[in-house]
Length: 178
Image (cartoon, rainbow, N blue to C red; front, side):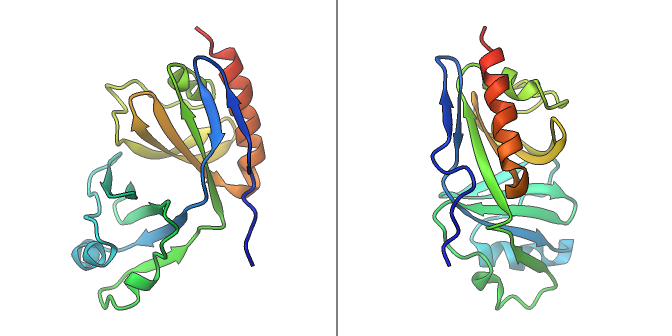
């Protein structure tokens, strides 16, 4: 069964900011102790980041550090992420969360202001540079936030909260004109 994306064809475009639904992607919730990181990294084809608020990218695949032994792996090509881990004998847990999550892209000069209207984290470039990621909140929901460019962010949220998140960002985008 092919699941329809929850925010299919939704977008808001202003001269200063755009809020759009991201294309579907494969996602993996990964847990692994320190001594398993090398084997898991090799299987996934990219080195898992080891520092707080960091991400690692190889091609289009990105790994987001969420905790000392926790990552979210995102692959927008739709490539399966659990199959490469099947042969890894090092202790780990990888759960496909592709249908649990969805993503919203916020970009433009007003992107930071739009997100800051509901996110208490300091999103300035100095505190949250390109490649930074974190688990945080947006209004009343938990999100995973990734800065993909100077004025570009990816907001990962559970699909059950996606309509709320999109509507919130739509209102915030309108109000973030500067």
